Image 1: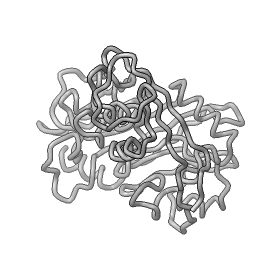
Image 2: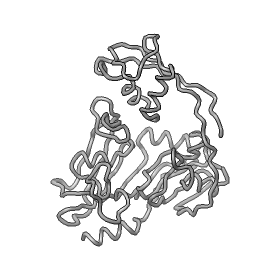
Image 3: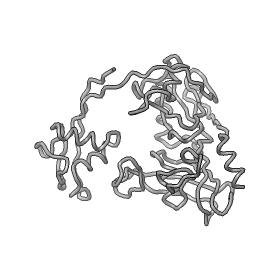
Image 4: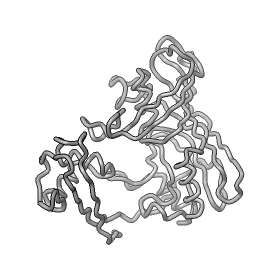
Length: 310
């Protein structure tokens, strides 16, 4: 085990709109990297003060309440290299572009510490990866869901990591996805501009949240009308929120085929997760300054579905 020895303190002030919310719910909405049960544990341990007093998880907050939470050092598992075959689209001394398959988690997380893309990268790159995101996420600038396929970029050094992170922040990276979604469209193309945040009713899910969400923009266009039930579309991300395409398309009544979290519960037999493929990724190379664009071919399952529904 490796340990981060720094305790982190966070300070918050309750707004008028947040008055009456439970303390644990408020903090879960702010500290989205931690679960609500973990936050409740911190409150019970006396690590949260409101108006300089120790409190309980269910306390109802009032406007202008001052909250201080102390998050203890995190113990991180040491991630080991694993000889896992990678589909490499491009590689140089700064970056490596991977075509990720279905059912591969990008980085270790609770319950999944082996078989991830990071385990494979540590073996392939001999530990030559950016250290900016720490032990569990070396080189990882952005991620795609476990069951989403396609291209992502990984950084081999901190110089390239900072450059790519800045491009992501400025929304200058080209990210195009292909998806198979339910229902016909009234318009061949459009834009969903709706903020996304944690669902207040289910902390494991994201949702369109006008109050506490962050701005999220997805541009879509129909590539092919497959039949009366499904459509093949392209989505271009202007922002990159968690589950953005899945949440946005579900919000306009076009959930992704196979997405049982945001779409119909009765998934197609034999289909593993949502039909979503990161097809194109383009960015300015951090060292050469040249624009580069990479295309990941559609996976076999996706092609079979296109043929089946045509």
